[in-house]
Image (cartoon, rainbow, N blue to C red; front, side, top):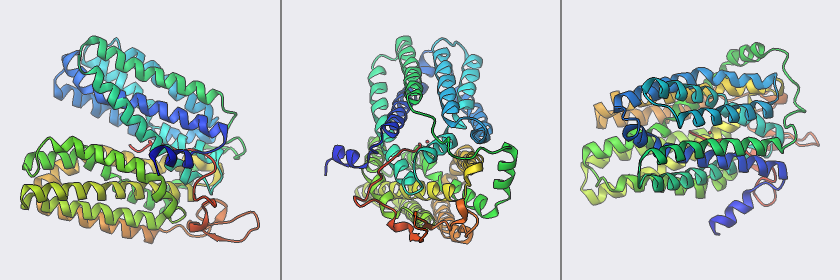
Amino acid sequence: MSLRTRLRAGLPTQPAVRLFTAASLLDAVGTGLYMATAVILFLRVLELSPQQIGLSFTIAGIVRFASVPLGALGDRLSVRGALIGLYTWRAGCFVTLAFVDGWLALTLVLAAAAFAEGPSGPLTQAAVAGISSPEQRVQAMAVIRTVRNLGFALGGGIGAALLIDPGRFALVAAVLGNALTFVVAALLLLRIGAFGATAPKSTSVTAGIRRAARNVRYMGLAGICGFLSIHMTLLAVGIPVWLATSAAVPTWTLPLLTVLNTVLAILLQVPLTNMTAGRGVRSVRLAGAALAACCVLLAVVTKVPTPVAVALAVAGIVLLTLGEIWHATGEWELAYDGAPEEHRSSHLALFSLGTATQEMVGPIILTGIVLTAGVPGWLGLAALLLLAGLASGWFRLTPGSGPAGRPAETRTPDNGEPVPGALRRTDAGRPETVPGRPAGQL
């Protein structure tokens, strides 16, 4: 089956959901364009040092982390209106970025953009829940993640073309192109009727946050899923630095490993999500095991001849991608299962803090502890990832902890009979309606 056929088979049929999917695709194209060009252009056009750029991104990351709880406002406001507002805000930030000069101006604009980026993830999840049935939302999010990966790849390709002549024109074209995608995405959301309007609105955002924070099982799963999201930092920082500094494999193979990860994520996200849908804890356990096995291979890769090392690196990326997909599936499932409708945005916002925390401390853990320790560091990380996956069973959501008082691993159809989560798929084994978020990082 061709990639086009796979995507068409998984796409939702409802026009509103297709519009949401298109908006997510545009968001990803713009983000891929920006990320592929930002650092090089800041270095050459703004003439900033690597240390200055790193500090700007760090400050922006802190702002993004701090703004994640603002996603809880979806319990009081229109989720659609909030997303349109965030798209518009980010578009304005990137238009401004095209004309900045100097470190301080850059940092202020990046921080302002990050302020709107933080709550976008949980609000997107809340939007998906509002326009899809419980039986469809996780598979729909898998479709969106696949489409977003395609968008990142397309945007990165456009960015690579702009870097042929990395001057002021390329900088302006990249950031304005990103701004344009946000504007068009907001216009697409305007064409969708109010989604999530049927969900009862919370009378107090703080009440929803307090309720989520007091749910030990839910927050325990948030912490576990947040730790397992270290696969993002492994791909971006840990694996490239480890392989490059150890000279285990030729440096020209490193970009190819990233490409392999992207291709596999595009091809496998929807099928693997359909296979494990309704089994959130099982997906998290599989993710922990796959990521642990990846770390073991990375520990061994420096002790073998180059041809074997390359083969182990490829196998490690395959395992990393499987772990990434299973982690996403389990995270979506568990986050939704523990979020009551009246406080959905609050719960999803707090659940997202686990991943946001990892994005802040993950690079420090990998570079300062794991890579410094070498082989023992990788083996220690493997053990922690495996234990984290297994520990998810200790926090398994029980009847009464999820929406409508249902267990996390079951669903209830209209006739009131409990149905195993594995039977939630349609006859064609694919979602009939709706979308989801990124993942990255959304």
